Image (cartoon, rainbow, N blue to C red; front, side, top):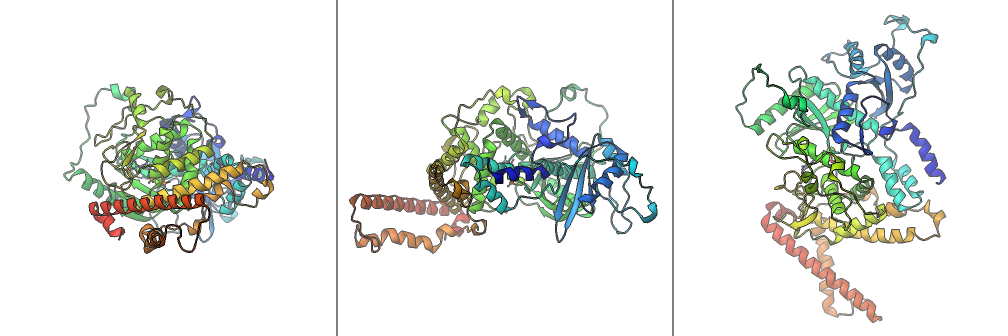
Length: 614
Ligand code: GTP
Ligand code: MG
């Protein structure tokens, strides 16, 4: 291992990356033959959030004083420091107590800020103000009574690694395999990031607990499915009833109560009622919840959401109330990630490649989303000759009564949760770099024009409509996950996977050559050559159909008419080279023709496509 990698390992001591660093406690998720169960993972973090508070401090140097002050409420198990950088860095410490009532005691000891004319809301977000001169707010502890706090588990724990630093680490890795692993290790959402997201969820839940004691605000999406990177947004689902997860045997067998709550009847239909509730809820978040700002309501979308920013957690949040399939989909992705250690690193590299190629973009649009791209990776891993992942159909088949989950609109999200019971074992031994190359090769060949991707069956199906890309929604099989993807974006994907296959193939070859190892640290090599310069990766939705395209076809068609042996001024002396050039031209010509054909058929079928393919 070279010195840069060693130095980075030391550096990572001040950052916490994974669960193994978290404080020991009774409720840590049990391991199922080395794998965590999703519901236990979620439950563990929910309980942890109930034992936690977040306190703003003037700097990390206040930690010892804060620890001593807050220890009066209970035993502190763990402490993490992080910064929110706006004009200046604001410092926070997340404290985890041993029991929820200890955290509650600390919160109850809070007072409202007399200097601000704000609403005095009780929440786990607090500020550690300076002790008053003369000790008016309580005597200082004598030095011999001061507790020595345990080390902070994170210092500046949400800081993302600088791009240059990350690239330097990857450059000095011994091979492409290690580059893929390092990228995953240094960019994935860390333990502190997960804790903070569960605290954001708890804040929402506590805010309405009086009226809705059974309400549940649950993180889903990349924050919890194991595919999230540092700084990813938080997808949150709020349910007034606790209808997520299995009913315990006790609940199932309990005698129905004869005391029934009086209830206001909703006369409007389900959707407009949800929109009305969300509107009202958006106002409440905006007016009362500390840290919540920039509240936006997007209520006309298929899944209505409220977007907001949490300034104490440095977090963008999407809150929905009616998307339980998204929640269960996160469970499926979590399980896939747990099934084989190659799944997550591979997906991270592919997501990064897509981001730097401008194929994905944080805002929604006509390009492929990270979720659809993740589905492409999962499908690729299912359809291999020796599959690395089972089909969703196989998981559904292995389900037992305890796995039964049905959403309120009757969508079945039933599949086996116990991975051992599924009994799937992969015989695939491919390395990460081989899999990456195979992924690009597979999609360079994939017939997006005629085939739909089904993760339920792990094979291509004939496409039921003219969408440019069709990924059968695993939990609502009549829907297409990638319906938003335009023909231009699908073509861009095909071009980019082809380029990537070409680049990676030569990288794999040169990585196996013994010479030039010294130069590697200076050069961009291996995975790095797949990642284009981020500044250059801009979304250009109509790029493929711009007039430039016509010039390309001119090159292949009109000039050809001047003579088969000469395009521009080139004369081919070698017959086999001439033949190769001609066959490349013929293939490109037929592709262009196919492309035009599919563009015009899509444009006659979709008014949206007609606009963009002009
Ligand atoms: P990033 O936010 O880009 O990091 O990824 P993400 O996985 O969180 O994606 P996104 O925020 O777009 O969606 C959140 C989650 O909702 C996904 O992880 C899925 O679990 C779920 N989801 C999104 N789109 C669909 C869909 O079309 N069908 C289903 N069943 N679930 C979806
Ligand atoms: Mg998300």
